[in-house]
Length: 165
Image (cartoon, rainbow, N blue to C red; front, top):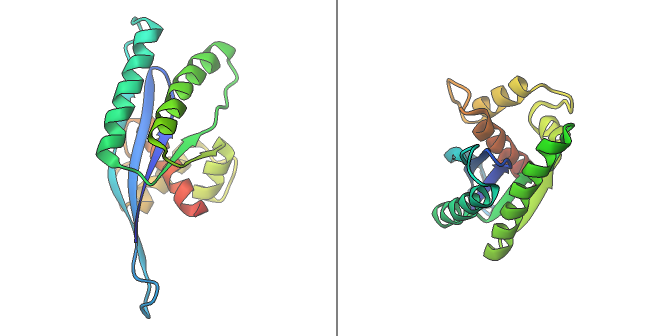
């Protein structure tokens, strides 16, 4: 059984994405096993000087393209957690567009707080960003941490969804 999971790290300037495939062998076999593979990761970026409406349109259109490409069975997204109000509002707007696109596709959606993601990947809810990124690299046997950070964060969200299955 194959399950494609798309992880998203929402943002207006940069929205990270990470797609993984979980492949489980036939449960009826004596030696059932599972593998996790990295499919793709990257970012959707919008220009800072562009009108916010156009930036949200870019996110909308690019997410539609991404969903057509990945065809996920499940989408996982990071919940909002910010201290600066101005940043929170713009991220919330981008997140709203993201939720709209997921609803249009009818893809099941799960949400995780930053602490839940850190706990799932490192065993510590207060782990730092680097520890989480190292855990992502280890999971996929990568020699380097995926870049940019937003893409590595999105892969962490996807892995958290997998671990929660």
